Length: 215
Image (tube, rainbow, N blue to C red; front, side):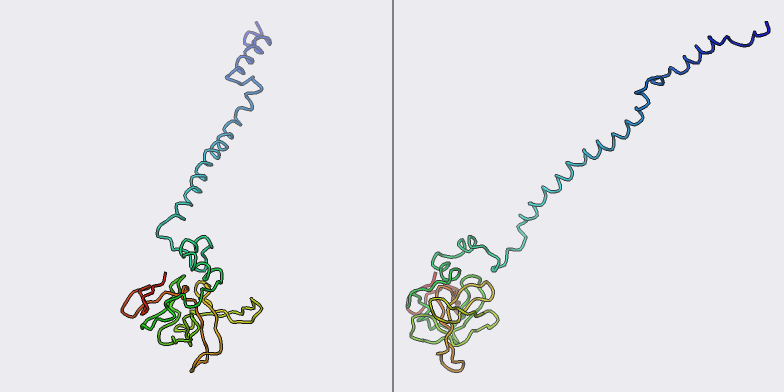
């Protein structure tokens, strides 16, 4: 009776064993279970990926915005120029060709007005500086707006000449020579198809005095 309050060792061990059998307590894999919540952030990151893809698909919408400024004339591709110009104008303006003599009504045009670039519309020459050179091409002794007219060396066809270009779109206009009248002594020999005439009281491309109109 001395040990009435003490449980036998075997019974005590059995009771301790039962108290340790809570849910998953004795399972070795259950000890790894607490790491499972760490997988949730990974799933959250994967769920965020479609949002990034959705953002990138909005870029073409911005590029196709009708209010977006059109590319500058100097940045147009040859294909874009072909869409803007007639085949004859493309040959002269973009491929540095030359129209036949006396083929342009502008060579005989005596109306008052301005001559614009046929490619981009920049103002180049005017009737004030125009004169009849007898060469068969519209001729001017000076540009109307010097900043819009550029020159470059042209050593093609076994000759040394000075090419005349539109400074805005780099379109080929013709050549300049030093056999012109006073006060400059220069002759800007320009392809008529490279120009668009705007009469002071009229519109671009109206008929000239000879009844010929430009494309």
